Image 1: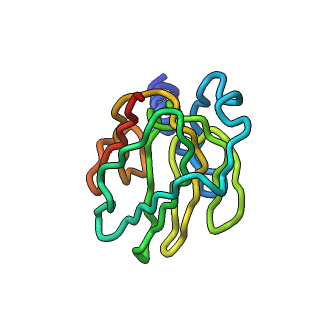
Image 2: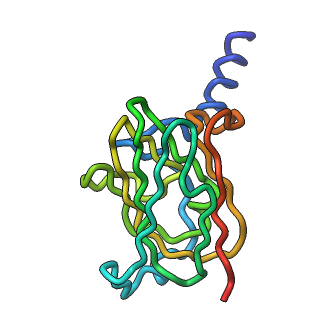
Image 3: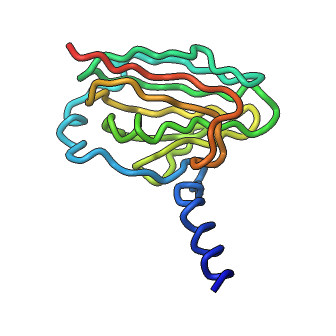
Length: 156
């Protein structure tokens, strides 16, 4: 019985820890498709986010509700880094995620894992206003011990 309980606990703790092509699976925003229709991604604002030596730069992002963005995350370290932001990803419509130019699955991310020197691009539309934390945590059930920050989505 003890082993079964331990196995169940480990399974619950690791939900969302599996990454496909560098993207951690998460929940999709309900009804995201209408927010993505007709978006001109060439005209979308690109925001560069760099992680280096346990710091995100910038640490605070401010987005406007209803606008399209390309978030470009770059790991400037040699080791693996993460951008975990499950609540944020549930509040935006995600059109695509790519790591080093290769589009990845799943389309509903909870975060991105980047090896040293890798860059990810996330094409999103900010939908739900609020403040959403992000961090450099490999496990979603543990508090961030390294870099962290927040995204604020402002209502019009």
